[in-house]
Amino acid sequence: MVYFKDLPDSIAVQERLPEIPEPKIQTGDILRITVNTLNPESNTLFNSGTLQTFDGARNTNPSGGQLNSEGYLVDRSGFISFPVIGQIKLAGLTRDEARIEMIKQINNYVKDPIINVRFLNFKVTVIGEVSNPSTFTIPNEKVNILEALGMAGDMTMYGKRNDLLLIREENGLRTTVKLDMGKKDIMNSPYFYLKQNDILYVEPTKYRDPSGDRTLRIVAAIATSVTAISLFITRAL
Image (cartoon, rainbow, N blue to C red; front, top):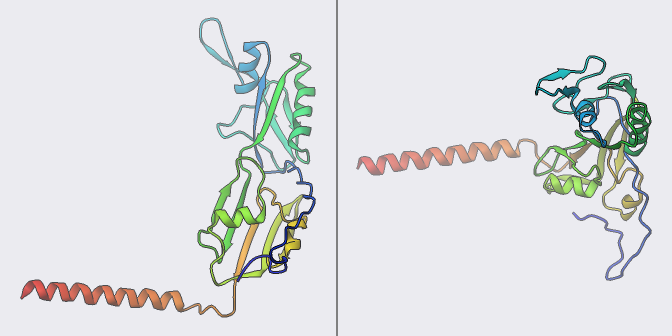
C-alpha cells in the first residue's frame, strides 16, 4: 500500500503551504522560562528563585514559586508559580503571547528584560501497526503526521493507511478524527500538523491474523529446542 495514491504521475505539483498553527499553552504543559536582564542578581533571582549574597550564601526567595528542575508546570487553572511575581496565567496563550505577558509582569521589577519561553514536554504518541510505537518528544515544537509516522518506523504492511485515527485533547475536550493517508488532500488538512499530546493510532487491516505472531513465536521456540537437542546428542556421541 502507498501514500497519496491520487497524486498525478510524473507531474510537478505546486501548492501553497498551509499556515502552521502556533501551539497554545495548555494545562499540564511544562515550560522553560528564562529571564535575562542587565542585573546579574535579578537574573539569578528570576531564573532560580534564589539570590546570591556577597558571602556566597544562597537565600531562597520567600515571595515567589520555585523553579522545578524540569520547568514550570501549568496547573489545572492555567497558572504557573514564578519567582518574585507569584501566580501568572499562561494557559491559552502562544509562546510569543506568553513571552509578552512575562515581560509585562517582570517590567514592574526590572526594565527591558529578555524572556524566552519554550515547551519542555511537547510530545506526540504513535501506536498500533507501526514498527516502533512510542511517545516522541519534539524539540522544535513542530511535527506533521508524516514526520511522526517516520519517527515510529512507518506503518507495517498490516496498517490501515486510509483509516488513521487521531486523538486530540484540548481545552477540556477530546476530539477523534479519521484521516486517509492515501489522499494528497491530507497535507492541507487542519490536522496534518500535530499538537502537543496528540495520539496517532494505526488500526490493523482485517486481513491480519491476530494469532500469526504467536504461531511464529511457537515455531521459533520449537526450532530452537530441536537445534539445542541435536547439538547435545552430537557432543554426547
